[in-house]
Image 1: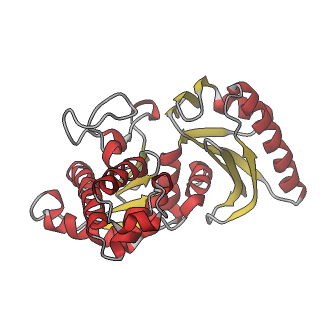
Image 2: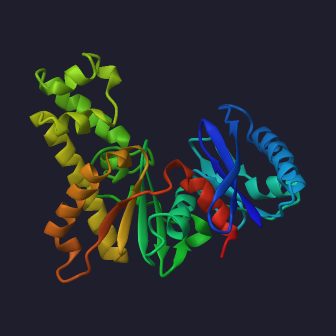
Length: 316
């Protein structure tokens, strides 16, 4: 039995068939065209899916269902994308349109929830029953796996972990609130902090790293220069890790997970990031004295986590 996993992103839609062991096969993609009407995009996606389903069925495979990870506020009960700023969608009937087009059972969840489920069932988190996942990218997404089950909250719209307020009246966040974790621990925030630090220190090695062009600053700039001992870069990285640790401390106290999984672009720093955060967590007693150690892990599935997790909506 195969299940189709779909990961909808702002530039492309990744699709692949996944078996009950979590192995990917027959991948295909579709370009996401910004500005296109949501119904047009879903009609095209349905046509593409239908053709690929027929192809794998011709090879003798049975397809049991279609799971979709979609960014934004997703009502996983009704299968509707209620709002997605990244996609420009409002009340898009994702599950119903794909179901009508393909004739297959279809489920939809938030993209970070899909990534969480993929890691919990088939990735770095499969030995744990209580997990927090943070996606560190343009924003900060979140997923929860509690007592062996994906937790989504009311209407499936919970686990917006990036929008926990960590500083009253702090930085403006894209959600409308101020002081959210996302405004301090996203790649967007790190780039902004890096640029501010560079402007104050014209002798920083970070200028050499970007060849004098501040527009070339990305999430790697401060980390790579910190590894070379640049004091300004070290301060930027340490501040970033403190903010991230503060967010994780809150999640530790609320959910008491066994591990926190980091995914997204910044997780490519791997142990240079996770080891530092683990030390900071330990120094803060994981939020409360005499509570269990919390491991900080890096996604094992990487960019495939969303596809695998979406398919896993159908895999017990």
